Amino acid sequence: MRNILAIAQKEIRSYFVSPIAYIVIGMFALLYGWFYSVMLQFFVRQGINMSMMGGQQVLNINQDMLRPVLQNVTVLLLFVLPALTMRTYSEERRSGTIELLLTSPVSDFQIIMGKFIGALTLYAVMLSVTFIHVGLLFVYSNPEWKPIATSYLGLLLLGGSFLSIGLFISTLTTNQIVAYISTFSVFLFLWVINWIGSFSSGWIADLTGYLSVIDHFDDFSKGVIDTTHLIYYLSLITFGLFLTMKSVDTERWRG
Image (cartoon, rainbow, N blue to C red; front, top):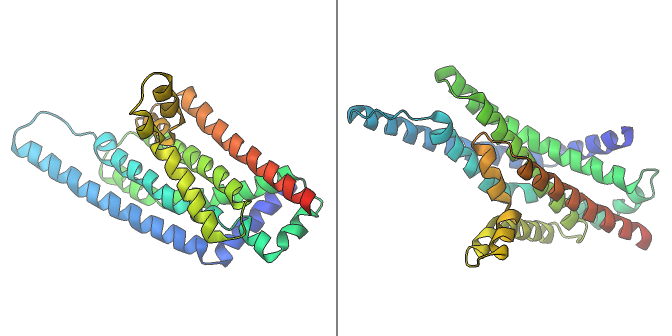
């Protein structure tokens, strides 16, 4: 465990030594703030219009305001998370430091978990920036905290799945741009695979629906934790890390 944490700390430091962490967190915070502002204004206007028309329906700030914001955040992850993983292995292979890492007295599992935890920690820091906006809702309104907690759990699992896949793709190339584009392409495929299945029926539609990463997030945003979704995300994370381990093991034998 000590080796894993040491590698994770090294990864986190490397993110903040370079401009990557600051640019990614800054752009994410800026775009999240814009989504938040737009949806809040829309929510307020909706409430005013309903009161002027004498409507009896009560707007739910969780479902009518915050949920659309967090769903837009999932779109941002398609572009942001490949930037976190594109250099994880490709930069070390390009600079030659991968040989030092592979010959050090640490196992492939420790290397992979250390890098994964480092990337996941940075992602968690990125999400924590949005707590300021959520906190304002509790100051000026009375949202339900459980749907918010499950939504962030879903975002963490979704991000972890993307990061594990991104780590694997990063082991396949020395070019960070190629790693970014390849990772983004795989993310996008997992995102739209249910659209492909919508033109089919039977088991094909069921399979593509199950493989869609975004369909599994929908229940989390509603405040529902289903074991099916938990198993899906945890299985995807495990599969991505397994492929990464096999790729790193192949690199070790080549060395």
